[in-house]
Length: 440
Ligand code: PA5
Image (cartoon, rainbow, N blue to C red):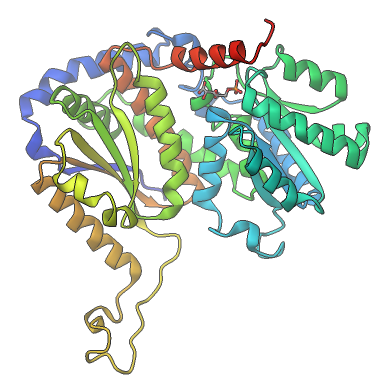
């Protein structure tokens, strides 16, 4: 029996009056109707909304088959992509796999290959060092790009194509490259047809940052050994819970509403904090989702991330006491993936002063750190929301992804922007190509 992800507003309520929630309620309900009926701004890219119910089952079966072939063939699996074609897979693997995945033995990794990411920067150092690491390994590549023209990914792919063709010959290289791209068009699709790469589809109506539950995320995630059926089941449960037009009963809509109320009060920065380092890339994914969806028309909450308790010793001072334009959202798992007991040792009477914690667990201490921090921040006029997962698992990860995607869309509609386009990103791409002398 599964539970669901909840929103704890106890450290935020003192900053919001009841009538503010009442004012926003009809707007939340309208935003829901627009989203649910595919009738709002940007609805050409709202294919992810009903995706947990309507995803392509045949493609999912093919992903599972491909992933087990890759797990049998590759020592190292290299995923090339950037932004929405990168962060979903990486964040899922970082959260659900062993922290030191690539350092484990094959057996300890349950037959998963080592996994590396590239094509997400233009650094010659990063790429050269990666080439050093994989030089004696059998590799399989997954190049992911919806447009097929993204510079960072295309440049890295050029390096890997050359390496693969030299190492395996053109035909075998073709069998070891999987391209995830548009079903019909684009350079990468054309190249795949020419050189015989297996292809998977980025649905035309799903934008990069909303694509983790498509082949974009699912192939790397499955290769890493995460149960993608569970992930999709969690997303479907998320669809069931969070597409209800109830307010304030729907925690996903309540989150969207609270952040918009804070925004109107001048809280222009949302700090997402987690107390597990494995959430680091999830926060990166969330930053892209909200930053790219809301930051337009000269509006938007600036999404930033903090890794607690680590950053309490660096950024804690600012959050507690600096400029008062921030609120926090804490990601919290009620039970951790693994816990550790604090040992009872012989000289507990005063050696390191920690005798009072002996017999407790690290999770218990982390939880108290979280409670104490949120209390302190609220006292310092920083409202705190808390998104609570019952546990860290593929199921709840799928649910969490859907929770935030849906919250982002509703929040964008409340803010009066199109949450599904990214004109600013296109602007940067255009300029770089022009400066590099690309002929269109
Ligand atoms: O969300 C987005 O649209 C972007 O972050 C893209 O995913 C990113 O720019 C990569 O684009 P593409 O998949 O076309 O290579």
